Length: 427
Image 1 (tube, rainbow, N blue to C red):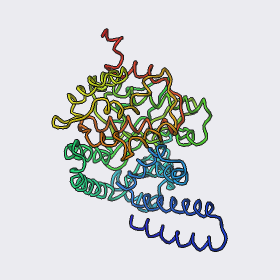
Image 2: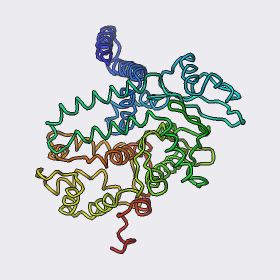
Image 3: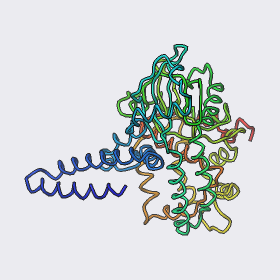
Image 4: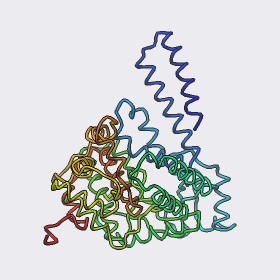
């Protein structure tokens, strides 16, 4: 990572030379931004593990950044979702021998050594299974487990250092929860169980297609190959109808998973989603999930409905009850309600238009250190049981804004979020 500022300094010197040569400042700035973005992709992509996961997280939230800053980096951040620098063929074959045995090739009619996709802890190869089915073979990078655990331990050490700056946050159990869930992503056997549960729950669905798992080992996962158009392409090139359709299915899947499979897909970045030729949403990568056998927490839907009604005092009381506000923290109820606006405003509309201008305005307001809303963020706790739910809820809002989608939010919340539809519950 140290190479980023060093190479940026070199590009700054190069830019000065070009200005002396008569090139316009705007043209030079654009060229420097493009080169810096390419360097960021190269560094984060080659580091893999936690560093690349950071890049993937950045790709979700780029919609909240000012356009003049985000535009040069958007393409590079999108590439980190599934197009990182790949492993060598020899390294792939070695892992396949270790995981599937010396005769691993006998399981396949054909195996393409060139990866179809590469991400933070593994890459995917297209192959033909011994029964003729086309399959996706996900292979974990050698040493990815040790590297990611080291990154997570470093995160925990840094988190403890910064804990005193955020008095309302009980950071130790939160970081431990995030570490435990991230380590689960390294276990492809566990991921195969998650994927099988989703595939069974959504079998034959009109809206969704979950690839079935054919075989799994601790570091190799083989599942059906599903053709589809990446969500990132719809974000970049989709028509209004395509964006709205993708946004609806994306939102619906994330909300329905807990009710139908007892699991929440907890990695919402666009690289994990495709639109199939039959216009279904194909969902990939089930390493990160939140186990919710009883569905989404009823308290979450209840609090969202109360916030929608504008009852600030009841919202504050409910947040304290759920552990979002610690007993010793004094906070203004109206300010809390204002802070929750990015989550609440879409619930006030039959159809809400998620877009970059809206999320940038909210992001700017909440991160302005001169604004009272900024201090509210320092007083809010995130209970470990809500960590992945919050990640998905906030991440999905950002992705819907990238899609620039109109989504019938109220109908989806009423159908799938317990406690939100108070009328249906007779309250």
